[in-house]
Every structure is written in C-alpha cells, then in structure tokens.
Length: 256
Image 1: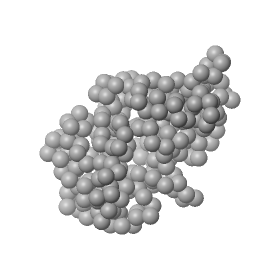
Image 2: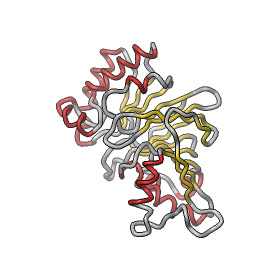
Image 3: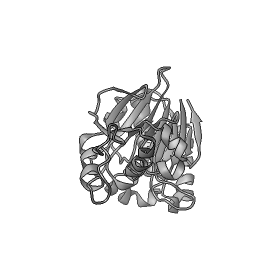
Image 4: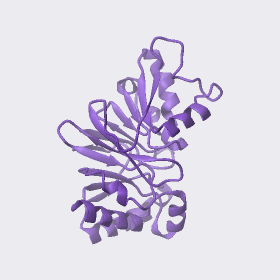
C-alpha cells in the first residue's frame, strides 16, 4: 500500500495544502488538496473519495475534481455518512455554488454518492474500509483501510479527545492523527474538536492499553502557524512513550 500525503495542514498557502491522502493513486481520503496537488492525468486515476466529515477544508475539491473529470467521461464514487453527503448536496452542489454533479444528464454523471454506516466493513476500490466515529463538532468518522495483504492504516480525520471506543475497533500498522494546535492552546483545541501533543500522548497511552502496542504515528492537520512549537512538543511525547511519531508534510510518500 503506497500512501501520498497531498495535504498535511489546516491552512492552504504557497507551501501548505489542506488535509488529503491518496492511496495507490486511486483512493483519496478527504478532498482538500486533490486538484491543487494532482495533474489532470493523476486526477483521472482517482476512482473513490472517502470523506471524514462535511467541513469545507475536507470537501472543497469534490466539485472541482468532478468538473475536471467530466471531460474524461468517467465518474468518482464519494463515500461518507449520509449527513456529510447531504451537507455537500445542500450547500455546495446545489445549483448555485456548483451544479449537482451526481445528476448531470449524461449516461455517466461525474459523481456518485455512496452513504456509509459506521462499524460496517465495505469493500471500496479493492480495500476493506471501516468507518469509525470520532469526536468533532459535526458528525465525523475516521477510516481504517486494509489491503488484501492485511496491511492497514487508520486516518482519524479531525478529532478531539475521547477516542477509547475508537481504539477498540481498529488495529492499524500506521496511524494518521489530527494534532492541530500546541499545548498552550489546549482549551481551544478541545472546544473545536482537535488534539494537541499533550492530548495526543493521552490518547496514544489509551491505544496501548487497549491494543497492547503502538503503531507508527503520523501527525496531520497541523496549523503551520504553530508547527515548530507542535514539533517540539510531539518529540517530547514520542520520547516519553517510546513511540515512532513524525509530522506529515506535503509530498510525503509512505509504504506499508
């Protein structure tokens, strides 16, 4: 399983992109950086998009890639909880901001929306995909994605503390997890549904108690404003836990 980090941050700039992963060139996880990070030929290869929740920085490029691939007469299946798909239909693909690309009058509309139920394994693009609820300000899930060879990652999407029930349902080799703010802004992080390095340490300790090990951990959804501060604090957490924890960055490639 080859993973590309298209976007690792919560703010877009000349050097940062909104959070998005791409698995084996075909399955995207969230859609903040699909069209800004991929060529048209690369976009044409994407067949599936998994959305964690409806916030703009995670769904922004759904209509953009739909418009682009409409020229190739192919379609992309978009998966998430029904509430997330309804929010996109109501507020973005509403005929005012963008056309409803699920209902374009052609034989093969660019988008097909596919509702997912939490805790139910689905086969998507040849992978076993399990949606697991996480803590955020709107209904949100993380995804465990497992290959035929049994290699798996879990991507938390945006999440705050309180993941004990999530850990009971997953066992990945690689964990992508939200750490948006430094420790001194913990109150704001909790109120907005995100983690700090200190809160990450508590959640990882809970993971170890539940699962008996710690996976490789990649930090994602970083605020570039505080990245140096977060990096120092994450290094302290890694040392105290004896864990392999790194910060994601745009263009990073990993293989599991």
